[in-house]
Structures are given as structure tokens and as C-alpha cells.
Image 1: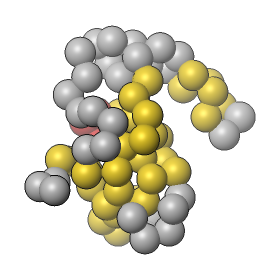
Image 2: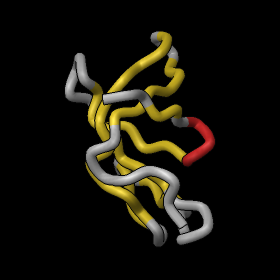
Image 3: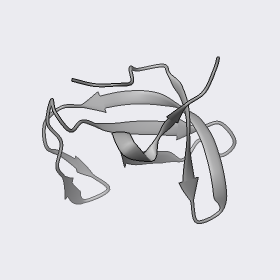
Image 4: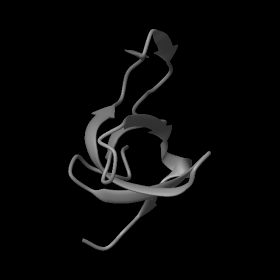
Length: 70
């Protein structure tokens, strides 16, 4: 079951350092992301997050994310 929900404000590590953004999609089934197949399930969901600063969309597993206070 998903730990985070659409709209949650989260942060994660990237090559450029710590990034913050809002979850735009929660995937609980396999999906295509930028031409690559990503694995997801109800037990191991993945999240699409829109960066607050650049509007870049990233996809991450639950354990890569930290929930921030809104």
C-alpha cells in the first residue's frame, strides 16, 4: 500500500543535490517512463514527482523519498 499520495510534498537526492517537489502520480502497476519499463506494485509503488524549481518530472521508489511538511 502506498505510503505517499498525490499532492504530497517530498524530497529526494539527485545528481544535483537534494530536490523537492510534489507527487503527481502514484503507480501501483508496471508503467513506461521516458521509454523505459518501470516496475511497480501495490506493495512496492513508484511515484512521479514534479520538481518545485525546474518542473522536471522524476520517478522514484518509496524508499528514496522523504515527506516534507506542507
